[in-house]
Length: 215
Image (cartoon, rainbow, N blue to C red):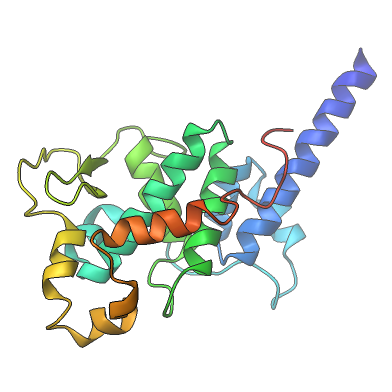
């Protein structure tokens, strides 16, 4: 019995180290990795002690205020990441792995420099789901009544129109905004820009790199 417990502990530790390594590769800070894996800060500093291979440093992002002041492209991409996370999590994939999978696919299909960091994605998902360090949700996913896209917005809002939908706003501003044209070329701009992203990701083996959902 003791040997079985030791084996289970070892498997969990190996799994946590694998997740930590993936998070670091995606640019996560120590605090983010600590919350996702349960490893201590000292363990992580020891694991990533090499200055060129370690996680990012600096102040951890807080997405509650940032999202409301972010530009349209940032809000669009933030919504895509959270929706991808939710779809993966709904398959029964462990939340840390669902976040890694969602973020990797976001990077793979980014047409320009990613606007959302892994730490920002983690913070957005935490405030949407009430996980990890968050005691109460402050964001939610709503479905636009016009374009049917799912998008991120404040939990206190219950939009009845498409006024808050970043995908509708992106479509309406496409011909006027060079930044949007560069991010979303006309040939990829379908009726529903979110479904272009989601269907592309969904058809390309949408799954995180670790094959095991749990240790």
